[in-house]
Length: 305
Length: 243
Image (cartoon, rainbow over all chains, first blue to last red; front, side, top):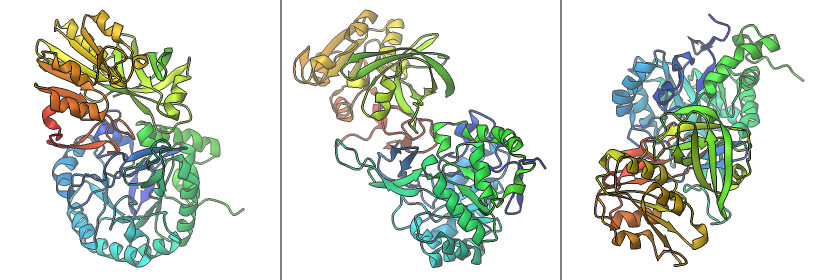
């Protein structure tokens, strides 16, 4: 077991850096650039029952130290993910992948999770109850503890693989939602999905995004994400995957000190396709400088003021 | 895709808000119709800009200052930039026939330069139609002529060349195939008014520029495509622009 290895819901992974869903496709674009087997794992593109185009374009906007997206879960649908994307991925990635599942009804989450449960390449199921860019699904399940618990229970009933629930920051009390997921059998919590935001074009006076609103990600959200990871990690006894604005090795350490057992890296992959590789390679030196022998020992290591 | 640091050799103003930048670095594999992405200090997302020309050591881009990012880019005089190159599919020149026409509008003109250069190098008889709003926005007319192309310039206000849109010049042209790049209304007009097959270079706001974020997708007759990855160049028969 290397000094970067961590445990993720009962499965050891070589390092805690996981490319986040929606920023890494199904891996093979990045496999053209470097050997993605150096990753602990990655979370693949949010998958629904049917194929989806997502929202009309433009669906990307920039902001200070970050970006807004309103892609709206474009994906080929679970059947083609299984018949086309996973076989393609198998050629370049020999580890377990995290399957990111989304939906518009409890039935859809169950349908997609059940099919992916049968896939040997899938190591974890990450349930996205937090997409801010779709209407009548996604985030609406993640803003209500009762609904969050219900989806968790339903997915748990159809899979033996660890179930990680991905939470939205667009709520008043994230702790109550995390607790509801834990009480309903979740094996882990990942947070945060993007923060809902908006931009207006000054010349046209129209929203930059056709969808009007979109999800903010990038370094701008890091302190918000860190605070929420800290709150949730102190309230639950299951592993927490921290994400939101991580761009460098130091951010990984900070997120883990706040209580994360592993981290996901999202927007950074889009501005630097080598971001995760650089973060992983940068970790040992940063750990040395901070006197950290094994990274798994620092989870929740933040000291009280 | 290739990532590297490129040295700024030149960054000059061509018109009121259009600049030409020459970057020195690894240019292997850059094809006409592809684009590059530049990281600009202080801006989160890279800026995707089409390739105007490339030789063994340099890549040239021509860009318009449309927002804060490109404005900042226009102020860079020296140093090196973090650039992704070899992005997108580029134009397929193998299907041009003997007398292709290249139709560009505004900052859609630049990617046609390297395209014209390569086609002329292959011995093709190339006609170029360059469309601008007005006389003082015109750039690269002489450069295209120097390559040996037949060049027509149109201006919407008639202050130079043929008055009207690029389609005015197209009426007078005989061609075997077309390659085009420009604003969407112009592209749709070219789609309606061309009599042969051809290729369109599209643009969209991009997140990554290399196929990861699905930000710039388009519905085509052959399914969902990413403008940055399967595009930016699409064949006429792929685009559902009939209505």
